[in-house]
Image 1 (cartoon, helix red, strand yellow):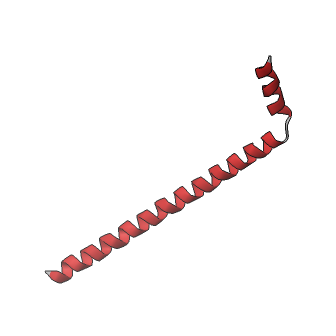
Image 2 (image 1 turned 90 degrees about the horizontal axis):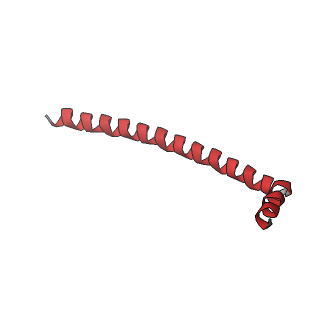
Length: 60
């Protein structure tokens, strides 16, 4: 019975809604950071490849 009362309390409390909103906000921020890191990694990789190619051709 106590478990049922706790579940009922979680459903009716307003603070539970805030926790869900914070979780969604954190998920969105995490997705934005992951996207930025992937994009930055791709850009850095292409710049390093270009620099390596330039050094290899000028050294020959």
